Length: 448
Image (cartoon, rainbow, N blue to C red; front, top):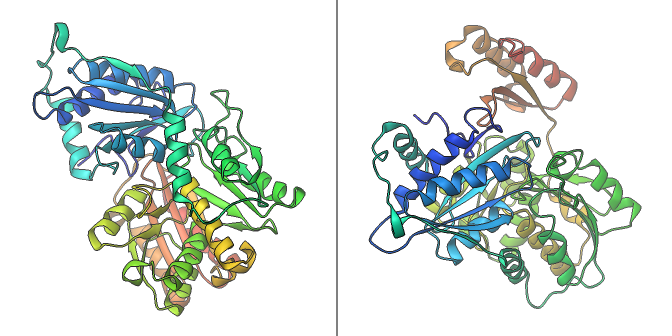
């Protein structure tokens, strides 16, 4: 069982275990060890978001990697999907992302990509943990010319911008299109506005002044209200809100209506089906996706496959089954023909191309799906006890399931990145399901 890695890497408060410099250095040594195959020089690429603690963890990771005789490529602030892409295109042996995604600035995290740009499977993360704490590599310390070097890659942003522009169809242009882009003061603060501007759009930029402490603060996909208001204020055709590492996106229609990942999957699935681009007429989503998505896809004759929460599990299912569209309600959209992981800018470009191809505003495309009322209650817990071992919780869940019958759904799960339980309910009456969700959550011990 993994102890450090959750659903999306290692995460926690920066400079508090496990997000310390010491752990980052050990992790760097373990990652470097699994990369070394043969006698050639090996390289690990490291990127980060705009958090203050990124400097500390980047330096510690570099130290660990170099101490194992592996070189480091430092790209500075760049989105998670950008680092995944460059890991592959620059032929690095692994990629490291230092980011806590949508979490507040005091948190940080570390996630690893393999040389092909895909996130490591659970088994490989478990192997890394064993190397970190098992002592098997403690004696491996190259010296003299065998110690690794660190190189700064100055053109990383430019490389990524070029690759993103190639995603957009060459026969289309964004000339005459006005877009509001909120970068959450995060990793995409330079790349995202540049991509849309270079494709011809008029861009109203928000959240592009990071100071190390304001990442995700009242901005981005976690707080999209300002973006929605800006769309109406500027008469824009679309609004785009990214999170801190830009691997997720939510958008606003020209009316300022917020559309999450489920809505974007429904829009994309319909268009791709009509264009005969949707492989095996299947979409992969997580257990959190709204019943409305399942209903909409079913009406179109599209199959919906569900996975555990985490875009990595969506990607694994897509690769295994040969599917090319998947994602999460939270805004991780995976267009596997164009990216190896969720990419907020890629998703936005794809939706824009669909608007232009069909000649319809986003609000009209969004009519393909009607959301079923859904509520999520989060509660801090001291420890993540197995839910099946808690009789009071199980009893409450069964009572609610009986009350909802076939018209609703109950999902109770622990967060993969925080000490929280998430109680999600869907049903026709929002007031009732809100009460049900709070009742189930009350059966868990308070984490304060």
